[in-house]
Amino acid sequence: MSELFDDGEAGNAPEFTVSELSGAVKRVVEGEFSHVRVRGEVGRVSRPASGHLYLDLKDDRAVLASVVWKGVAGRLAHQPEQGMEVIATGRLTTFPGQSRYQLVIESIEPAGVGALMAMLEKRKAALAAEGLFTAERKQALPFLPEVIGVITSPSGAVIKDILHRLRDRFPRKVLLWPVIVQGPKCAEQVANAIFGFNALEKGGALPRPDLLIVARGGGSLEDLWGFNEEIVVRAAAESKIPLISAVGHETDTTLIDFASDHRAPTPTAAAEIAVPVRAELVAGIASLEARRRRALARMLETRGQRLRDLSRALPRPDAILAERAQRLDGLAMRLPRALTAFTQQKKLHLSRHPLRPAALTRDIAQKQKDLRRVTSGFQAAAKRQIFNWQQQIANLERVRQTLDYKNTLKRGFAIVRGDGAVVTSRKTAKTATVLELEFADGLLPISGKPKPKSKPKTASGQGDLF
Image (tube, rainbow, N blue to C red; front, side, top):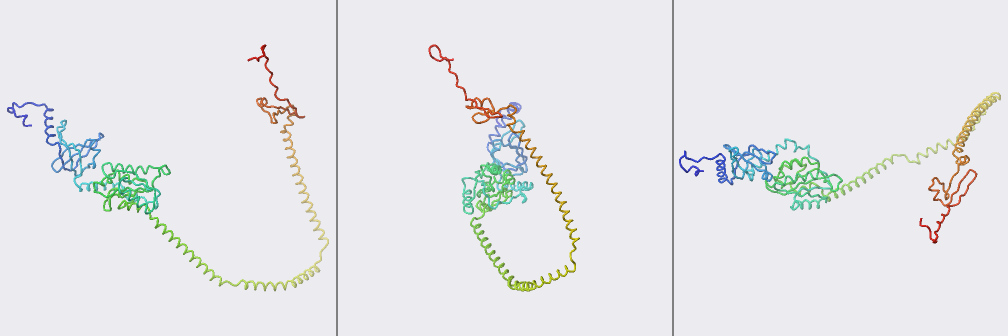
């Protein structure tokens, strides 16, 4: 800028337009600060619909306006948030329309692990306040899932460890959804995999998993950051399929661990949690069966001993029958004497009260009168029933006579039969070879079809074409 004012005194200094002066300032600023790294705290953050990202970098004494263009903003590994301490790399430029300068950011990263941890704790508190980590949202894991969906990298050692562990414990069907487990695309792919497994229909061509495992090996905080993204946490919390998170080693903790239904310290441990040991189940069933058999044998032995004890307290059958037999013998011996005495008693009573012929005659007459009355009533009912049956038979005979087709023939009608079957149409009659008519007094045969007349021949002896 000094060469702009070298010639002459200030009064003879050349004149510049505003645009010329702004352009000169722009060239100087961009030339001197074409590549800078700035450390500061993120202040105001704005994300308009255009996709560009506007933010302020500040410290305790100054504020630097910054912009991240749309193409760069979509590739950022860490999205800046207010209050986050970052290191931004880019170039300084001016914005002549507002007479200010700004930093065009090409990359941005948290300023050390402390900044990441601070942002992580802030995000964790916000999601916890929404209730995404509460125990009431967590689902119980199935005891023995038929299909297990695994979300991890297809080329890493994690999927091999899971498959090997499942094969050793209890082989199950496994569906693998391949994803990138590190980098800026990790969070989106993991969330889409969780949503994709939940979108499968039960009984469809592709079986819907009964359990999901999100797995990744160990790594630094930056490597595991994709599993701390809000989109992944919400997908895990909204999953209708029970989900096990197995991200990192035992000491690594990510936000998906709090949103999942169960956390496994390692991917191998996730496979152990997912299924029981088949050999242990078989051994347990065998042990229970042995216990059942022993318990049944003890119960039968106890009941048998109890039955034997009770049987000893019962009287012997011969003793019970002996007493009854003795009583029966006594009664049998007394029976002839009792019958004789009873007969003598009745004879004595009859001799004292002889029968009166007049009373006996009146009783017999009354009984005969009652019998004649009952017999008369029965005969009248029988006659009425026979009359009703005769009326019903006569009515049915009249109906039969009305429906008999021979009566119809007597009125002058006839039935046409062709080849033994009843003919009901002109077309059927033309095709029949033998026709016969049935009248009321018998059948009348009709000869078959007449032979077609031969066409006359012409004078030359040939038939007429027409």
